Structures are given as C-alpha cells and as structure tokens.
Amino acid sequence: MSRYELRFSGAGGQGLITAGIIMAKAASIYEGRQAVQSQSYGPEARGGASKSEVIISDTIIDYPKVTKCDALLAMTQEACTKYSEDLKEGGVLLYDSDLVTKLPEGNFKRVGFNIINTAKNDVGREIVANIVALGAMVALTGQVSRENAEKAVLSSVPEAFIELNKKAFNMGFERALEASK
Amino acid sequence: MAKKVAFLQGNEAAAQGALYAGCKFFAGYPITPSTEVAEVMSVELPKIGGKFIQMEDEIGAMAALLGGALTGAKALTSTSGPGLSLKQELIGYGCIAEIPCVIYNVMRGGPSTGMPTGPSQSDIMAAKWGTHGDHPAICLVPASVQEVYEETIRAFNLAEKYRTPVMIMPDEIVAHMRERIVFPEPGEIEVIDRTTPSVPPEQYKPYDTSFGDVPPLAAFGSGYKFHVTGLNKLPDGFPTTKAEYVQAEEERQVRKVEGNAADIMKWEEYLCEDAEIIVVAFGSTSRSARFAVDQARKQGIKAGLFRPITFWPFPEARLLELSKQVKAFISPEMNLGMCAGVIKGCIEGNAPILGIFRVDGEPINPDQIIDKMKEVK
Image (tube, rainbow over all chains, first blue to last red; front, side, top):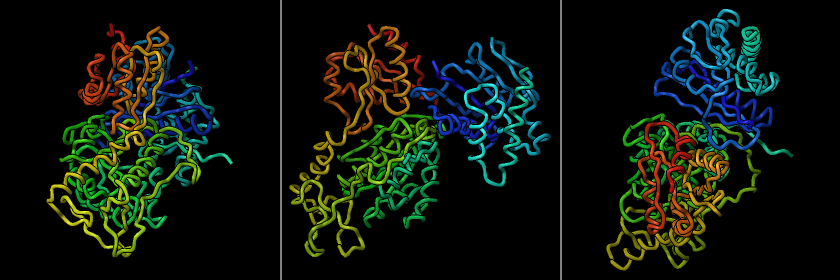
C-alpha cells in the first residue's frame, strides 16, 4: 500500500501548517502524486497545540486524516506526548532535542536535533525553524525528492526570503541525515 | 495545452469557482472557518470590476447580498454557524422575493459560538428550516476541493435558473483541506444566467407566472422599476392578502425546487449494487466511509456508500428503493443524528439505521464505521 501519513505537530505560530502545505504541494504539484493536507488548531493565534497532517499516495486519497502515523514531527514536548500514540512500528519520529526530552517508547526510529536553535544560530532567523524541520522530514521520509521539495519551498515564500529559506531547507536536510547516522 | 493546476484549500476553491460562474458581488462578515473565501474575493473582485463589501455584521451582509443580486449581479456571501443564524430572516426574504444568490456556509461546531475551529455537519437542517415559513431549499454538500469548486459553480447555476437563494455547505474539514485542483477552461463547465424580461419596462411584472414557474428577473438600474417586499405579493410585486394569490404563490415558490428535484438532486453510489449495508454519508465523512467500505469489502462485508452531493432536495425515492435490498443503513455524521432522521423519513421502516454521531470536534474515522458494520445482523 502506498499510502504514507505524516504529521507536523507543535505549538500554534511555529509554522507547522505551512510546513505541511509545502510537503503536500511538493508531492502533489512537483512529484505528480496524490496528496491531501489538513489541519487542526485551537482558537489561539499563538501557542496551543497545533497539527498539520499530510497524506501522500499513488492512488486517490479518501480519508484525509492520519490513521496510523508513518512520520511525526514534534516541535514541543506537549505535541510529542499527545501525538506519538499512533506512530507506526517502523515509523520515524523527528523532534527538537532542546524541547523534547521525554521520548515515547515504541518500535520506531527517533531522530532529534536542535531544530529551533539551528534556525536561530546557524541559518540566522528563528522564524525559518519550520523550514529546517521540513528539510529534515523530507530527508527522513523519502516521499518526495530533495529537488522537488526545494522547488515547493521556493514557490511558497516571498521573493526577499528565498535565500534564507533555501539555506534553512538544506541545513535541515543535512542535519537530519547526520543525526540519523 | 496542459490545464492549469494548483494546490488549494476548499475555501479558496469556492472563491475561484464563484469567479468562474461570473460572480461580481460579495458581501460578508468574516468568521472562522470561512474567512478565506472573503479574503480571496476581496483581492480578486476589484480586478474584474466587481464589488467587495465587508458589512457591519452578517445581517447587514445578507441584506447587501440581496440588494446586489437585484442589480443583476451574481452575488456570494460566506459565513459559518452563528453567521448563518443571523442571516436566516433575510434568507427567507430572498426566498419569497425570489432573489438569486449563493450562501456559502462552512459547518463548524454549534449551537451558538460552539467550537469555531472544529468540524461539524450540524447545519443541514438549518439549511432547510432555519428561516421560518414554507419555502424552497437547495443545499449542496461537497466532499473534495475539486468538488467545492465545481459545486460552487453549480450553486450559482441553480440560483440563477430557479431564481432563489442556494446554500453550499462544506464541513470545516473540506473547507480547510488542501488538495490539487485542475481548473476547467472557460466554457468547459456550463454557466447559467438568469432570464431577463423580454417585455418593455412598462409591461414588466416581476412575478408574472405566464412565463412559467420562474418569472424573468429585471436588473435594477436597467430601466425596469418594480416593488420588492417580504410580504406575500401580487404579480406586480405589491403586497396582497388575497387568498387565491397567497396560496398559489407559496405553492409555486416551493414547486420551483420540488418540481425540478430531478434536475437539482445529485448523488454518488459506490458499490451499492449488491450492498447489504449502505453507508449514507456526505462531506468529509463520506471520505471516511469510502475508506471503510473498501476495507470492509476486503473482509468480505458487502458494504456500499451512498453519498448525497445535493442534500436538499434529498434523494428520498432512491433511498426508498435501496432500503428494500439492504440489511441496514449506517449514518455517520458530525451531529447528533440529523441525516439519520431524514433517511428514516423516506424508507418506510424497511431497514434499521445505525448511527455514528460525533460532536466532539474530531472527524469520524474509518474504524468506527467498520466496527458499526460488524454490529449489523
């Protein structure tokens, strides 16, 4: 079965819905596969639990939400605890190692690095932490090619921020590969 | 040439569909989870000589919608739950005065302010009975981003063809979900415009039934003058209490829709031919149901999906037919049994209806539906 389910979770305002949209756009528009992105969020503009779910498949996607999560991104401890329960055996958890310290038990791969601090200190702007995380998710899931994902990123951000996001995406991609060695 | 594609949200697709249908006027008041429709229309309408207005509230928005529509413009408003409640009196006004317009309502948790960001399907009865009195009701319930686009065009077509308000009601999941959409070329999908008078202004009567059940509608500002009221009216639009007019007019207004139900109704049947269990589901819930039906078939359960795309008028006759072949219907819905009640009303007790009713802001998942199928004896 080709259905692959991803969840981007964290706090409202971290840009996770955007990261999910870009992942789905990369699959749907640039890879020519099927993809659906959906989201659930609270009434708060900032803070509160937020998640963005992406289903990628080679056939028509009926149910647009996650049934058994193949890949989970957790940008806060709260999100990690709340959303890791349905993580599949053999799946992958990507987490921010500064913020998520209590890792869930289970037969899945755990990959962590300091996602937010990478954005802040190495890329130069904390605001692109979601794109660092997206680059890492692309590397860990292999559902879309690096080239197509980068195209989707660059077509989704304002002209003035293309270089910043390109750097963020590629740094995330590389860090994830290093961290999963 | 390859067709234009985009990765769009349901609400964005609704706005694009409205523009394809020729919408030139939007009046609304922003409300989660429908605001993206207003956002897109506020950007796009000025570019094509249309008008966008944000009113002081939903009542004002509905009043502006009716006024805009009477000038000849195809008119759209978007809202959700509490906004729909506020619009109801003027929706009735639109029904009796026979003003074509489209009301796009995203179903969120209710009643009242409820759960603004949570999905729901609990406005379907409000679509039919939210405004008081006998009146026609057309309500469409799309299930994908592509379908939101196409059904929004159809909503305009039905409004124009039958000279009446039409509702289109995606649930919050469909409205906020993003999928790839393929845009049709201009002319590829039929676009219907209202019939305008063939007689000169001095002979024009806005409710002249000699032209049939849907009298031509003149545009204000085009030289035609006529009276518009929420009272029962004579063919010239002025109020009346004359029994023979009131009875005949009320019947005609309802008959415009009920008498043309075959043209308005639309549904999809998936694996229903030999089905012993039929899941009746619409909107995002139908996507869970289709997933469940496929899984059930693999387990040897003869399941099928019946998916209304038009909710009102409801496909009563077809469900009555299907009720003679099934062991049970399953009605999964994000409300406390509204659709189950409607099904019950048309199947003459031929089969039991097992409900899955969820109002906690979470979608109905396929496993819940499969579990319910296993309860069928």
